[in-house]
Image (cartoon, rainbow, N blue to C red; front, side, top):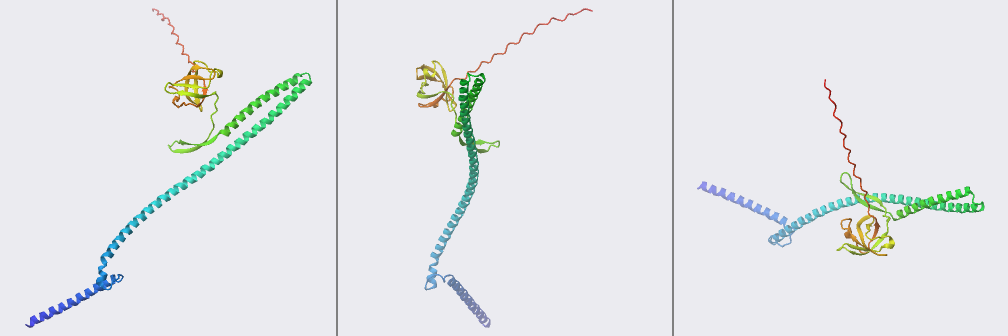
Length: 315
């Protein structure tokens, strides 16, 4: 009995100790829960605990929003990096553009200088021509007053020859000045030896037509016929072949089938140039076809002469 009583006492002590431990553990958890829930409004722990699921839900939603926000931030950072790269590229382009602008301005200054020099030369030639004209008039007056002296006649002839030469130089200078006034700087794209595309600025001079300019009055592409405002009074002849050019480029060749005083009709050669581009109202330059000179065939070689057989001698 004493042994049983002792065992029961031990069990009771252990049970009491466990209850104390359990109570302390529960109390600790309650204290911890109260610490976690201290910021949650509520009169009791149970009331505050009831709000935990909704708070956790809000926390999860907030976490999703934060995650989405972080994704947007990364996207914005990528866009920012891309924009920085584009800005750097634009900066490089601007530097290149400024460099090109400096070169272009230098070219313009060079052209203006050339234009100024040409104008100065034209003015000098004008002055020289006027001087020569005055000398010619004075010399002719002296010739008249001195019974047409041979020496003065020769001087007048020399001056007139010089005047003619200077007038030719003046005409050439004026033509050069006209071309410079009409010229413009254009940008072309070329391929270098390595296959890279490069931009280059060139001076584009206008095409100066050397032939008569005809206006297309009517064109019939279906029947390959065209009429122009040039006729016999302009030197156009029946059955004549005429090359039509646009800015120096051959458009087509026409065979004149009907020629009147100031109008002609021709048959378009579809196998030459770009005749399909001819339109009513076109201003086309007229030229004569290039006649290819026949190359004479080489003369046949003279036949080889038959040499007599060598005589044989008997020993």
